[in-house]
Length: 244
Image 1 (tube, rainbow, N blue to C red):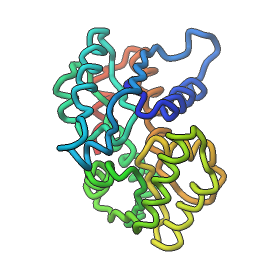
Image 2: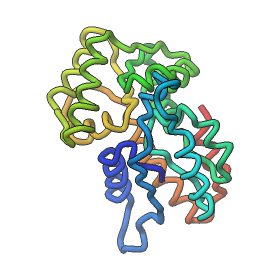
Image 3: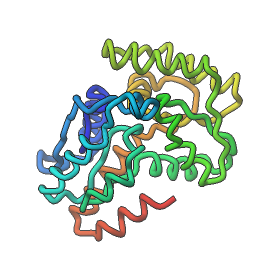
Image 4: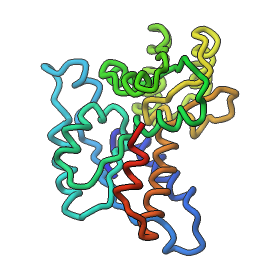
C-alpha cells in the first residue's frame, strides 16, 4: 500500500479494510505492508505547474521498487491524483497496481447502469489530468464538473479543512452534493479524491448517490487478498477487476 497522500485519508482506508474484513481470530486479518510517504511532493501542484513544481513520480517509483523487493501479490495506491503516472508506475512494478479510478467506474456502471450524466468532484489536479473523465467517458457517460463555485468549495473542504486542520466539515460536504444534484442535475456523484472519501465516511447521512473510490478499493482489496489466500489465480482475479 502506497499511502501518505494524504495521511488522514490513508488512515481511513486502513481503518476500512481492518473493520470490513470478516474475522474470528487475529489470523483472519489481511497481511499488508503500508508505506505512508507523507513527504511526496504535492500531486496537484505538479500537474497544474509541471515546470515550477517538483514531480512526485521519482518518489513513487522508488517506493514501488522497494515494495517489489517484498514480492507483494498486488499494490494499492491510496491517492486518486497520483494515478496521473499510473502507466509509468506499472512499468516499474513487477506486481500489478490496482487502478482505483478504473475500478470505481466499473462499480458505478454496475450500480447505476441507467444514469447517463455523472457528476465528478475532485482536486484541480485530478480534474485537469482527466483521470476520471477518461474512465467515465469510456463507459459512454457524460461528465458533469459543476462551475467554479463547486471547485472552490471542494478545495476548501480538501485543503483548508482536512489537509490543513485535520477536520471534516460535514455540512460543507453535504452542501457540495446538494448543489451538484440540484443545480447541475446529476443523480450520481463520483468522489475523485481520498479526502472526499474521508468526508463520506464521516458524513454518510445524506440522501445523495455517490461513488466512493476509496470505499470501493477497500472492498476490492479484501476480496482479492481473501481469494488469493484461498489459492485462486491472482492474475485472473485482478484482470477481472481492472477491465472496464
